[in-house]
Amino acid sequence: MTESWVVVGLGNPGREYQRTRHNVGYLVVEELAGRLGLQFARHRRAHADAAEGHAFVGTPQHCRVVLVKARTYMNESGGPVKAVLDFTKTDNLVVIHDELDIPLGALRVKHGGGDNGHNGLRSLRKSLGHGDFYRVRCGVGRPMGRQDPADYLLSDFRAAERSEVALMVAEAADATEFLLANGLDATQSRFNR
Image (cartoon, rainbow, N blue to C red; front, side, top):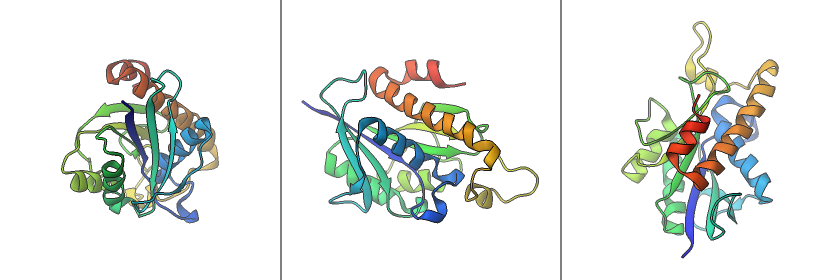
């Protein structure tokens, strides 16, 4: 029997958001797609782009992976994600997202938890009826001074931050692959810092 995983990168569609802090999830699933040699295309039943393939290194060969980027704004991403889960007939979900409360470049992997004011997670919890999924939390840090956190999240990474962000994106992709192959405890031991 084929085991399926849906791996969602949270973000906002459109060129103007492409390299913003809020789109780290998109960047990570794009990295994963590149590693698997996959291209994103419109999903048949969901308002999302998806790329489907088999097995990251170390996962069982029968493991199917569906990478997803909702085509809606982040605060409406729950509906498309639920549609993909229903279509694939799986509850195995990993969500990759930005996290203000983690320093830039750091990662935390966890299962469950609250949304901590994150509109994408709030939308997922509302559509799914629970928060019982894995999360790869990518640190973007808090804004300095009095900058509004919403404006900060929708701003591009500064030039001085881009190399650190590229390393974090690669490490978040590593952590996602490792999670599917080795489970939560081993992943937390290796990647949470």
